[in-house]
Image 1 (cartoon, rainbow, N blue to C red):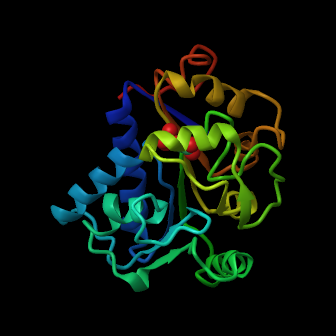
Image 2: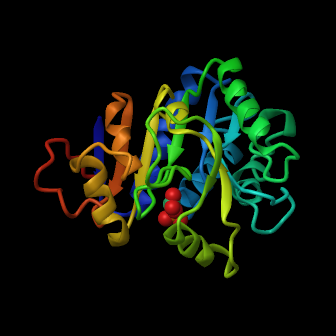
Image 3: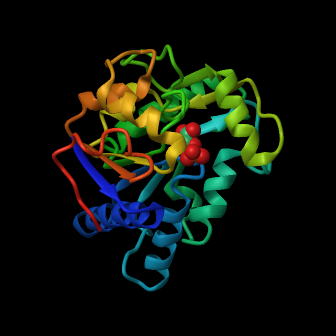
Length: 249
Ligand code: PGA
């Protein structure tokens, strides 16, 4: 595991962008799994800027959108895929055939999840997955109780997650969702976990220092050697003194 602690959110986002840039230089046709939430938004803005100034190109990539509320169509304002579309895919002119997403309104949600999982394999695995951290330790919508070997599936959202998600839309979210599984996350060639702000400090500490347990799924990420955690000082405050890897930007 590599831990990068940055001064602030802006620098956290810049450090993450650098990782994506370096991947795209090596592999223009990379597979990228991208989460939604507030944490990666500045990273996505940076990727848009980089593409618009022709420093990178996402045109050959395949993008996996890794979570969606159950029963929600892509056009719904509070579709997570729609959020990713607005915050990155559209401004970067990513074509529909470059996108693999979990269709929340699929007729057969379980089959949809299986299909998503198969697509990851068919594309030769994920070159990178960008993840945020839930205050309850979830990764994607892998909520407390998730098994390490869980696959992409339909899940029931915890009350904490539903409350947290309420703030995105000022609207209640469905009780269930689809999420990429823990096993597919752990199998990615590179995992980038982003954390920003004091509200993530306790969760980050538990993820990196607490027991590796289903009760706190983010702790499973420590089993992946290819994990890079990028946290700003506020998120990293509880263990900043203890870590040997320190990068001040
Ligand atoms: P946030 O959400 O990036 O909006 O804080 C992260 C998460 O709950 O996974």
